[in-house]
Image: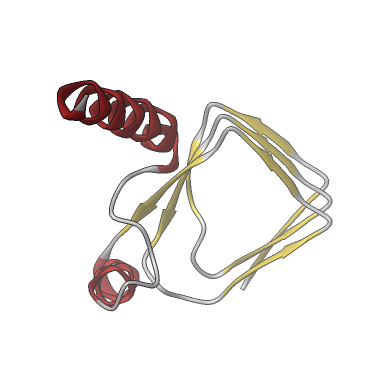
Length: 96
């Protein structure tokens, strides 16, 4: 496995399979993962996105299918809460 130590990445697209990240900082990066070995030790990730391919993508689909992982991206959660809240308010006003 490739060792990556004490580095900062900003806005990069990184293939993370078969890599060990130690004491790194990843800011606004896109992390691509296919299901291989990977390790993060004392590594911070801020504002990163994750893209899954191959075996990893099939695992994500399985977890979604059995209800252990959400289908919607985390950033949509706030939007969906707003939509549901408005729908509930509309139903309440119709019921009155």
